[in-house]
Figure 1 (cartoon, helix red, strand yellow):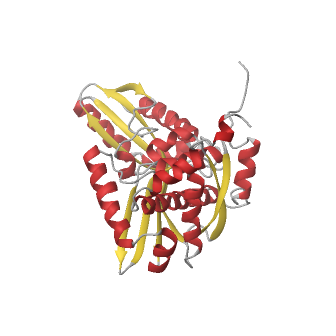
Figure 2 (spheres, rainbow, N blue to C red; figure 1 turned 90 degrees about the vertical axis):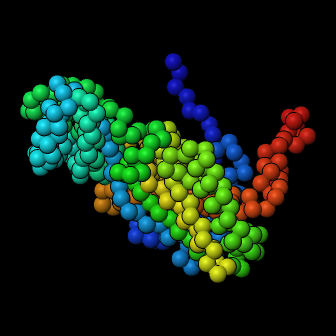
Figure 3 (cartoon, rainbow, N blue to C red; figure 1 turned 180 degrees about the horizontal axis):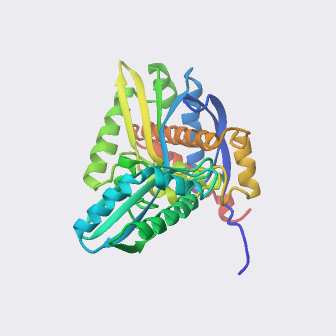
Length: 351
């Protein structure tokens, strides 16, 4: 089998202006995508961010990587007694995790019992790595110790689908997995009119009707947004992330309010899974992109990954705002796609 790299078109758009509790930065962002209208769309949102003094305010409210295991017990009562024993041994379990690496730390766990099965969902911090492998390594050590020291239970699996990795579920939004980032932007009435060609009231109403009610009718899982996955996939591919994590990463909620003509616009992404070290980050173009984003600087462990997360979340807001604004105007979205994606006669004949 020959090694190769699949080439996906990539452009830098922006800059995006970001403030908040992680970074004060104005930076261009890389997006690798076949959907060419995404670049100018995110670029329009980025332009709006630079017209507002604070830009996009990004608040990181939580971070963790999770891995769930499950064990079998003789019956539900035995599983319950085992769960109490695990709860009582938190400090002991934390010490075991610390033997698994310098940057992995056990910060909590949650358990659930169904029939005679005990599911244990461990939460870790993992420094600048997204942490999939760190969390699995630590969970494996924890599972071995639990099986060796707690009677009445036996091995089920190192992965119990209660994490949840690369699947759209409710638990990640409730208990957390990855970086939880809230982004906010307040756009003055004049900018909404002149740059987005719409009104705050129109965007707020569309968000309720489309993102809230439409998603409810479709059976969405803890998610109400227009297209977070578009921006996340482009950003993930450009920065060496595990692209399958857009499944849970694109679960999030858009909020839009008309504040006396000004637009309050927010995107909450509770499951952003990103890292600046680890698998994929050694590729030349990825390393260059992370360097250009300022995410390879000499900082305390975890700070570069947090910076990358808030930049990713701000990029999502840029694209989300631009798309919703376009969809308040009949025909605007399709005109952009036809102009940017339909081949011209010249490209058709290969000239």
